[in-house]
Amino acid sequence: MEIEPDEENQEEDEHKDHPMELFGFLQEDQHHIQEFIAGVRRALIRKSITPQQICGLGKLLHGLQRLPLSTPGVDICVSIRNESAGSLSYQSVQLTESSFELLSGGAEYGPAGSDSYTGFSFLVEVGGFRDDRMFVEVEDWLSGFVGSICDDEQEFEVDDQGEALDWHEEVVEDYWEKLDSEY
Image (tube, rainbow, N blue to C red; front, side, top):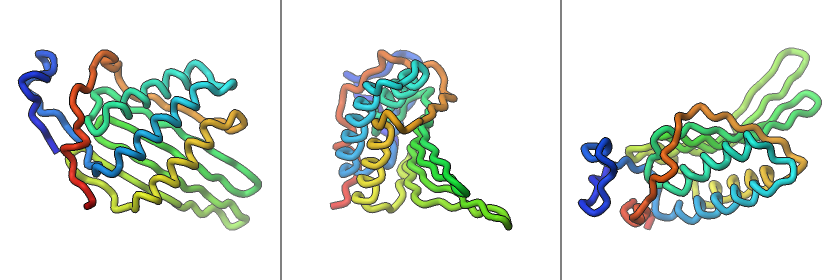
């Protein structure tokens, strides 16, 4: 979905001729994104958090707060891995300027080899695509992920492949109201 900027809300000169790009979220997703933002903020007070993790979560937060607008230059992935005898499981959140993805899965290792699986996947893209996941499934997944990244005992990684962000770029309009609704 693309929306032309209002005259009052024109972007800086280099963005004036480009329509604002919106992710394909539904209005009802706003609540889950707001809860996720609050959870990321709670993770920032972990005693074991590293400077790299703080920077990465800051970029994630910036991109999340701008949703459903795309954030130019953002490409951040926050992931959790758990390994035990013969198995690996993971959860990850990735936000780029064109996609928002929640993913979990893992692998089981045995004498005959390994078997990998995807346990959960939720993808929303700029331009209107949104997986058909139920709101409750997304809410439960995000709640579990937030619990893990807020747990001082749980290690997590941040992979920042993005460019420099415009930290002063503010959202001056509520674009959630312009999105489609489930109802």
